[in-house]
Image (cartoon, rainbow, N blue to C red; front, top):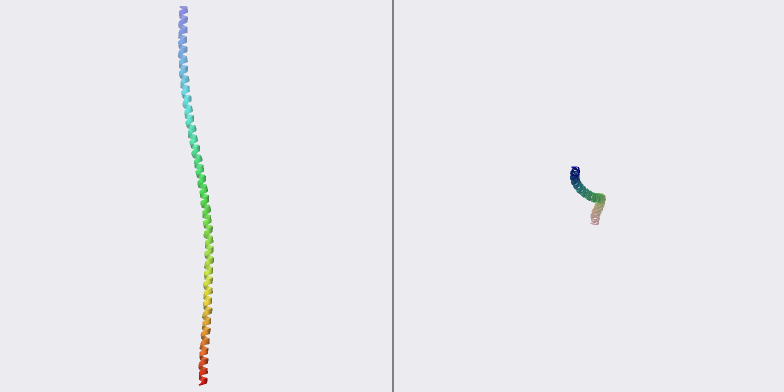
Length: 138
């Protein structure tokens, strides 16, 4: 029984070793699957981070475009304000020129009226002189 007993022990130990090796292979396969799943999750997270980075860059570019448009609008508004102020000054100057022209016209009309009065007075005086001269002649 020694030899046979030794063989049985060896066979049992080999069976245990095979079972242990199979368990180790299953465990290694499970770890390999877990590692693959972890790589897939990591790759998914990397893709998601890249998408977020691209979106952030797109938003930054949009914000820059909006900032430039806002600056252009501000400059246009400033130019419009300046043009409006220039137009106001020109309108004010034109109003003063019109007032001065109306005053000059009024002064000219008053001078003409005064000259007409003088001429009328001279005519009246001339008529009176003719009447007096006619009377003297008779």
